[in-house]
Picture 1 (cartoon, rainbow, N blue to C red):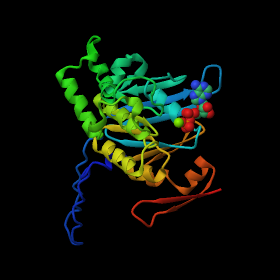
Picture 2 (tube, rainbow, N blue to C red):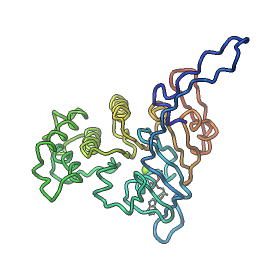
Picture 3 (cartoon, rainbow, N blue to C red):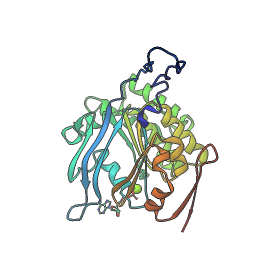
Picture 4 (tube, rainbow, N blue to C red):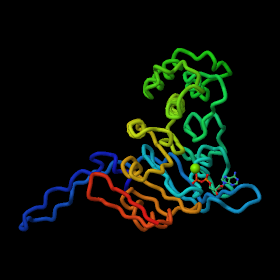
Length: 291
Ligand SMILES: Nc1ncnc2c1ncn2[C@@H]1O[C@H](COP(=O)(O)OP(=O)(O)O)[C@@H](O)[C@H]1O
Ligand SMILES: [Mg+2]
């Protein structure tokens, strides 16, 4: 079970083999920790735009708590559409999306947002809020009434911690529009952290980031102890960062498993329609592609 991979000592080592003359066979002493609960599940999900055919078909998978899942696939494979179903932006045509066991469309938008935060590709640029004010918006689902513009003491502390975590202290009071693409991306992640969700969903989060910030972001996401689903173009990053890789091809699941079984030459050839070679001699697999 890949979900157990991140739990050190999930299975205790087997007892040492006994000498041949041992009287009775020794039963190995194993202690298996209970599997983490499923926090997100897609059950027979299909989706397509109104009046058109399906873009996503027959999606079935369950995500255990704490799992880091990368979603990979060619442009147009349906990755962003899949995330939109998961963050309750669009409803499945068939099937169900369950969050903590409940149909997400039986939950309110605010209730969903207390549990799940999304970091999207498109970032707003045309308004005058500062970075801190945008991060503060992450507290909105937790507030009663409409007084979000004057956050309480604990909200302010949560916002300050999210800003510090994303290394934004020096620019927190600058207008969002004056920040670089990478800085804006970090603000949006800080907003998601301020939401204090159980699950974070990110659409190509490394896109605007330089290499150091890519690695830092993925390490930070991994260190949060939350469930993370992220679409990633960089397969080396996916292999290093994810416990599990889901590969989409034309709206269907082509592969779903630990990086070593999902990211194979055969799957990548099918997913991206290119010849693929994987060099596994180093610490991390190296992918090379040819037409
Ligand atoms: N609302 C929509 N109306 C029409 N077509 C859509 C809509 N949303 C997505 N699509 C189409 O669905 C396909 C998958 O898109 P998308 O999920 O954005 O793929 P990816 O994120 O993997 O690049 C694309 O062909 C896209 O044009
Ligand atoms: Mg996309």
